[in-house]
Length: 453
Image 1 (cartoon, one colour):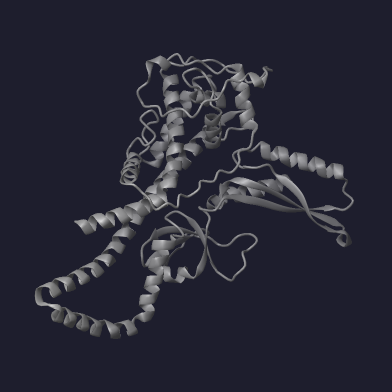
Image 2 (cartoon, helix red, strand yellow):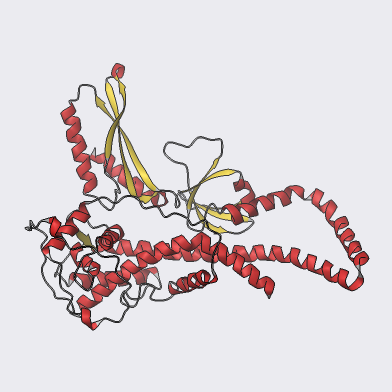
């Protein structure tokens, strides 16, 4: 029992360190969707007045905005009767939302906590949080059934239709409707909360959100939730396999100690000699296989270069990185001995020994930052600077009109001047909202930007 408890704490702490930050980020996204679903429920029940909203025609001074508060506390499914008369946004708050929508978000980096001090309470809360996402209503009952992906899409569509009731819109929802969840009890707008909603749903530059974009935002959180569940379950299987190895060593040493205690040191010494006499020739015969096994197990247990669902690229360490990326694989399954991969281009499935991957350079697209999109252009040396500036303004506006694709503004920079060949080489570069994990979306954006140029 003591051994089992010790192993349980050890593996629990390791899972906590590996997945705690991912779980925290996921719960924040879940909370945002739950708050919007709760708002849609209030609108559907008629507890928030319907009105046609307009963001234009207001010129209030932005210095008169309300003081911003901290994030809203989590709302439950039971509606507080004191909030049934929640008012619509004021014109000043609408202007503030417009300003925030037009701003570009800086990439957010979550620092890893390297501390080894994990308390038992942390493990209990971690386990309870995992249990909360493994049910029929992971986004609360206000959102609806999300047990499967199809049910999640249906529920998200219904939430969107309820939000439309606030303005009687036919094809979109004004972002100011969703921003009602960022009002506190005193009617003050939280700028931090509004930015979180912008980051989660990415409305267009007019502040509108379509049904497809809303469902995509909910579906992406659902996908992230299911992949995290699969990764944690797979990690538990690996921990069980590692525990079996530890058990062999533990019970061997325990048997020797019992033998020495019952029959004396001489008897235990004879057992050790017998075991070494058996193991020594086997170790010489199997030293290559055993070494590879240990190397592969250490890759999975210590380095943890990937988890289920990650898109990875495998390269030799001395090789140079390719300009347009390398062929990628999706991780289907992982254990101590092997990794099952699916080739992204053809869906072919391959099983690879972990030891063969230990000496490779493994590029994990899911853990990489937001993808950078770069396009090389050449202008003749006789092209006027005014035309280049006009082109630059055009692509800047192109990026601003697509907030669900570009995280930063598109930059145009000269890289080389080739007078003898009669051209100046420029590079268009921008940071995509997605990482290379979603390679199809990144390439689609790159192709459309190239065609626009």
